[in-house]
Image 1: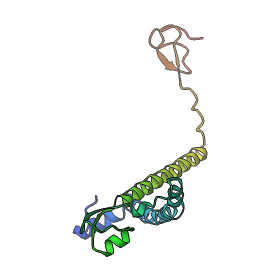
Image 2: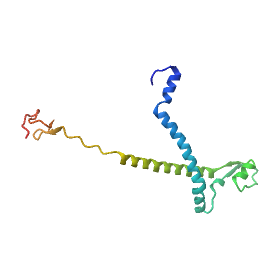
Image 3: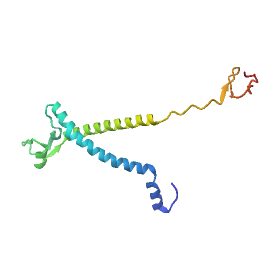
Image 4: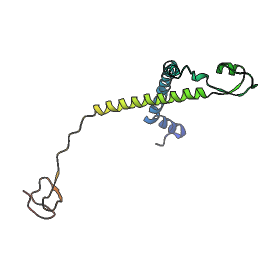
Length: 156
């Protein structure tokens, strides 16, 4: 980094680097994107998975760790309201599904961007040859040479 006006100058130079700004924009967009995917998972995908698994509601899968031992709770909310300590493994399963879906959607997004950027690249024309091989000694020589500088053979 450039030497500037002390610590404040260095901090400003650090913040104005392109990578830091790109990272900040990526984090903000990622947060908004995560909210959209969470809504997709909670409102569309999890009900379908629940239907396919026979009506299992992942958000209500839990184990009571500490309670009176006799009381059973129908929902996680009821257990938490009663003050029971719970192990909420259903929420973990939902979070893992959420993570896999976000990862897959980001993969598809990056793949689409890479495909578009490959299409946008124009093929660079191949540069004309500036050297050729001597037919006698196989050394590289200038394209316009009429005699090989290595073996002194005449080149037609």
